[in-house]
Length: 177
Image (cartoon, rainbow, N blue to C red):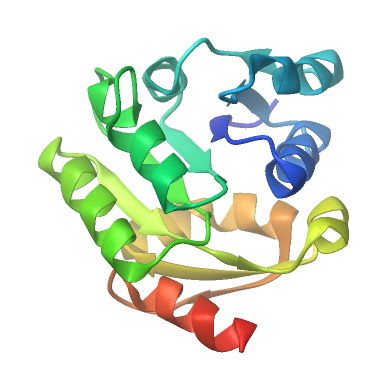
């Protein structure tokens, strides 16, 4: 079995992405605000966590794929959120589509803990997510980007590194246009 990876957010895109990681033999720990959404992933071989903090505590790398900035801020900074977890040398990879300011706020909180952060929004929809054919737009900690490449290879057909935090969010807007 490959590395243990956390995955938070099992909506239309996240469920398919997490399932691809399970199928690629990653040890995946999942969390969703609606806990019932974890059941299919658990049946496929993932384990379920009760809170985002628990996911981060168990995994060196945690991927987030949430619906909007409000959800991202709640999961990252709220009660039992990512930033409340205890542990050393954690990497957070936020693949949600959010604005640059939201990414910057979450990044600052994660870095204040001594952890590392990469925004990595994706271009693609449900079918490319199911087929592992997303385009991943990484920005932030370049070491995290490089370490996450094997994960990105499972989730997407192409990934690019775009420099500082905010550039991924900005490029996602350009791609959507």
